[in-house]
Image 1 (cartoon, rainbow, N blue to C red):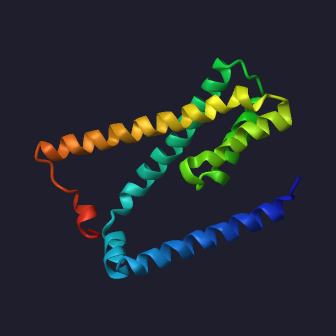
Image 2: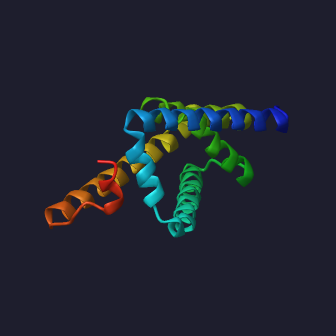
Length: 157
């Protein structure tokens, strides 16, 4: 088990690397337009955006627990949440298939066969794809009905 200072160091390093990638992409994409778009973004929206992001993760945890319950996989709630969030470590793998790590952790810690828990990970990905298709279809429908481009996107396109 890692100590807290080791975890904090890894979080700081990961955050710095993420910021570096963002800066590199901003410069490649025309940093002046990106900076202008960020400066024009209303600060009053940040609390709302952060709330929606928090709700997104809360709903995902509830969905994860729902699927585990449907398959009669019973583990302590705190462990379930920790295993769920551990999957984000592997979220950058193609198709997020690295999230099968969650199934491996369920096997390692609670003896749940991977063949029994992998469908939970599959259903998470499937519902993500369905949600993206719904968002895309909504955007296309909006555009076809004469909807315009949001002003916050005009600066970066």
